[in-house]
Amino acid sequence: APVEEPPKAPTPPPPAVPASAPQNLSVDDVNDTSVTLKWRSPENTGSGLDGYTVEYCKEGSSEWVLANKELITYNRFVISGLTTGDLLNIRVVAVNAGGRSEPVALAQPVTVREVVDRPKVRLPRALRSRCVKHVGEQINLVIPFIGKPKPVISWTKDGQPLDTKKVNIRNSDKDSILFIRKSEREDSGSYEMTVKVDSFEDKASLIIQIVDLPGPPASVKLVDSWGFNAALEWTAPKDNGNTEITGYTIQKADKKTGEWFTVLEHFHRLNATVSDLVMGNTYTFRVFAENKVGRSETAAVTKDAAHIQKTGIVYKPLEYKEHDFSEAPKFTAPLSNRAATVGYTTKLLCAVRGSPKPKIEWLKNQMLIGDDPKYRQINNQGVCSLEIRKPSSFDGGVYTCRAKNALGEATVACKLEVKQVIIPDEKDRK
Image 1 (cartoon, rainbow, N blue to C red):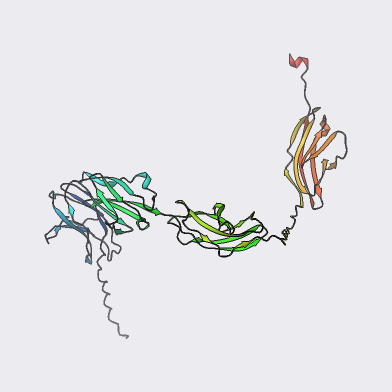
Image 2: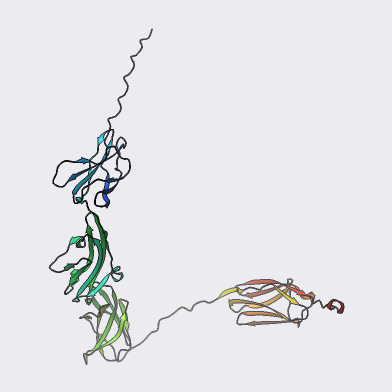
């Protein structure tokens, strides 16, 4: 008989793994006797999540007190029965079969006291986009706020503490003043104001942009000269004055006089043609850059000069290929169905275009109308009309307008209904 194999021992369950620490612990509310907390669940729950414990410790003590007798499953908890004025360190721990997680603690101790007014920055509407000042101007920005007890005010620039040698901050119970006596380009940046009352805070950001005159174009050169014209090209300035370039000013000077005259102003492109130069003169050119502050203090000057020859000037006009406007007939306004009354002249209208000018033909029930004196055919600037004089009931039917030229033809059609006027007799009228 075969030998029976002994039964296998059951596989032991995997060891329980504690959860990771809860996330984003913060104070939701505080008063004279309680602190309300909120947090987010752990990113990794390990072997599940049974609940949380909330613990607090008075500042200066090492003894942690358990705030909840039983595990709580919500991500919000009120620690009550506290003493006014205590300064507490608070932490939250996630618990499962694997044990306790790493705690998450508040970054700052919480003072148990009533917060009358939570901090709020009231940034003026004029500063919500950006504050633009010229170099050398004074900056005096007043930022109101609310908060009781008296808030703690702090400022940063581009995420770093302010340089108090350049920027002066003056705080009162209701506003904070940012003052710069003489602004410089380096004062541009993103400023952030923080108002904090205990564990509550509010922030406001504003952008200060200090602008200056631009530098001159990086280079300018004379590309070509012909007849009474000179072509110039230049490159944008290396320094735009911390704001966009809005245009350029181009000037010319005759070597005989050396006086500069403006020929183009607020010009947007990086190349231009200067015309109406005087025969026999030699010209140099210079270009200034412009922005919202004004024109650059210096200009870029051409190294080469443009000499306008006195004789031997031959101007050869450019050859342009004549555009072909040929087009097959196309109706731009179709015929519309009409209803007419016996004895009353009516008119059918449509519009056509084409090149060469198309020949217009009218048909009734697919039969060419031709020169029938009952009809009057007019074609004026592409507007085609067919006048039917005093139609009878036999003049009803389908009317077609056909346009033809060497490139093709097109047609439109409509239906005309001619109705008889019924005159009531004397008895009906009575």
